[in-house]
Length: 441
Image (cartoon, rainbow, N blue to C red; front, top):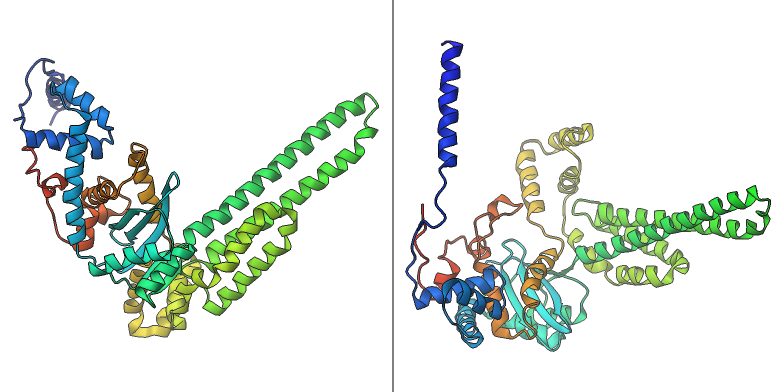
């Protein structure tokens, strides 16, 4: 075809696009209409409160200004209380037998502890209760209630909270409770970052003092700064040495000792004890900051390393360690070839099984912290947290579908759907408020 014909067709396409996007709709043209019923108004109240995180007074203002409907704060509260009762009934009827790994933690609203439990695989929240205490009896009662709904995990993950662990021991007996690596790693990282900042501050002070001495030397009076400069250089060197050592120990702890793929348990224990001893040897330099981390590590050693006690075969462990290497490195393919020669026909099955197990073996309770971040937007709207309100939030978060997620299997699905594998209606419909308005194409 000729160039002239191509240019003509391109011009037609450009004109068509311009016409399509420039056809503005008049601002006062009616786009569509909605039948407004009492049920729909209740849907609006719940949607504004839970989806938009509006306060009660914000809901009344929206209804007054945009819908011309006069609704009192008490009416909004009544709708929320009714929805909370419906949500509580649904929560209590949910079968929890599909949960294999539970994540437990204690989050706070002010001084009120909120006990939380989350499924590691689906992010389904099976426990969310505000209590006056967080002792063993309180935890034990809630875990027994969850057991009546079928909750019987293979193991749980939690921090070093004594009440939490004692309550699980009383309720579930020998069910393992592995140590949470998220909190201890964050604590170690915070220590390393703080000491790094202090070291940079010491260097800045030393540099400023040296500049001041240079100016004084030009005037012939630098001698009186000699002692101060010596102390400043010594403090700078000590601060940087301490920060470097703590950073190195923190990296060893994260990448070698607590890593999912790593050496055998006995080796990990030796390395763990070495890190604790090194922290103890440096504790005199900054006891206020180093001692709490050292004590936390020392008290949680067995819980943090519990995951490494059940890897039976050296070849399986070698397959685990191989996952730490990038697939583009020669070391990866050398290890891959060695494993294949050792395992023979079993290699692909074993390697695939190890990959799947590692992908589905959680090590931290960070999902509870994620839940805490989502709840925080609602907690700030309420001065007092009642059990019905928390039950409604739990129901909403469990049945609201993820708009986006780093894990492709979660996108467009709710935690309830991920846990059960079954589709469910919209959460407003589940509460008994009927179907949503027909969607416009």
